[in-house]
Image (cartoon, rainbow, N blue to C red; front, top):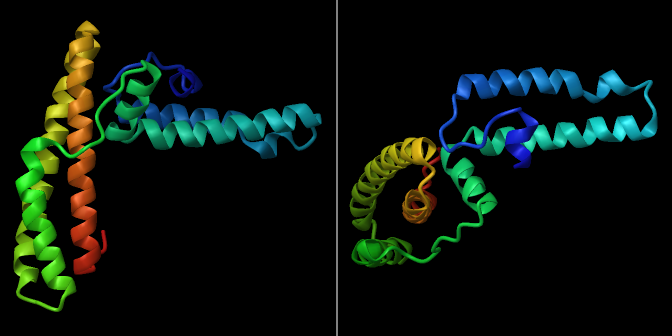
Length: 174
């Protein structure tokens, strides 16, 4: 797994973020292109390539959801990308409120604020569930747990998209 290897880490779902950051800074100093200005072209290119890998890897691995998606992709675990059935009614109500607001009905703003709060709480719950699943998988490497992680990630992605839609309409800057 290229991103984990870049930092000398064992591929796991749960990572110590302080350790990850320390490894990122160490390797970034090691491969910084300025250290290779007098080196040959191939060494300069390798430094640029390693710097790009380190930046991409750090950006991915420091974010639990992005890390899990990357991990599942590396393990060739497919997961659904459609709306979770348990959210369909809430999505319908949210879309109605969004259309009302777009149509000029400012009274829908309160409903959207409430929905945003509900979805943010849901996102927190999903993140907590995922953290527990990460620990379970890392302890036992059970494929069924990876499938649960995939379902959790799908749900998380969907809820995060709903929050973005509401924020866009309410002009919330996060």
